[in-house]
Image 1 (cartoon, one colour):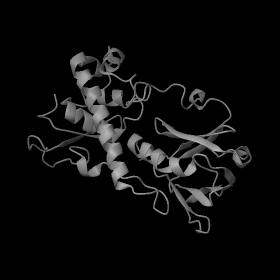
Image 2 (cartoon, rainbow, N blue to C red):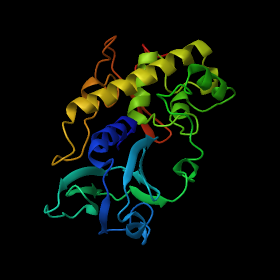
Image 3 (cartoon, one colour):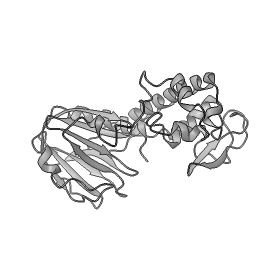
Image 4 (cartoon, helix red, strand yellow):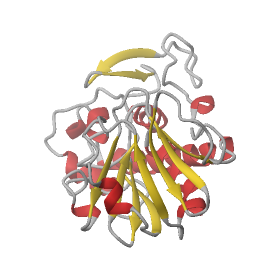
Amino acid sequence: MPELPEVETTCRGLAPHLEGHKVRSVQVRQPRLRWPVDPDFAKHIKNARILKLERRAKYLLVHTDRGCAIWHLGMSGSLRLIQSEERAEKHDHIDWRLDSGLVLRYRDPRRFGALLWTAGDPLSHDLLSHLGPEPLSEAFTGDHLFSSSRRRKQSVKTFIMDGRIVVGVGNIYASESLFLAGIRPDREAGSISRARYLRLAEVIQQVLRRAIAQGGTTLRDFIGGDGQPGYFAQELNVYGRAGLPCPTCGRPVRDITLGQRNTFFCVRCQR
């Protein structure tokens, strides 16, 4: 599933090719995504000029002079820029034809993504209005985590994955951050000290920044490629490494389930 670094890389990769251009037409081959695509979507955005691309949590916001398109990549979605004559394949559901001659194509085999439209402030949309701070913003601090965690019985891993607390800390990066901060993922969120939350907030930011940089290095261009940003896989310490030696102490990495998600940690290095 695309997580925050992958969506950020997508945003950065597409922005230079979309901003300032007009959407000449839209073709929706398959409207049945996570939520049905508005039948009038093509009318809303036809001839609209794209002003800015930005990311909010795992959503890609395409601001135009008519309104804002809100794109979510779901579990298997990707966006890429292609030449207009390239034939659509089975899972290519939506095309935006640009005045540059390029086509922005959305592919989603599992159809868990979404494309929505709002004429108002997208940050006031029901999907976005309840979200917590961005992890790379000044609003996200260890003090914020500490104060939000008091009296909470849930595990610290599910706590930092809660979008109302902080957005975009998905399963992979939650496991990695807790490992580097030395915190067991199944510890009660309310039992962790302020000092340890200060460290965890710093680590979350470091991990996400490294992942974004890694994606930017792996991905050369969204034009003609597969539209898939590079993942942080080659630098993972514990995620997906159950039974393999911990890179710090050598003990086997453990795998448990928290919040219906696979969770990886080292029993010696994380307490």
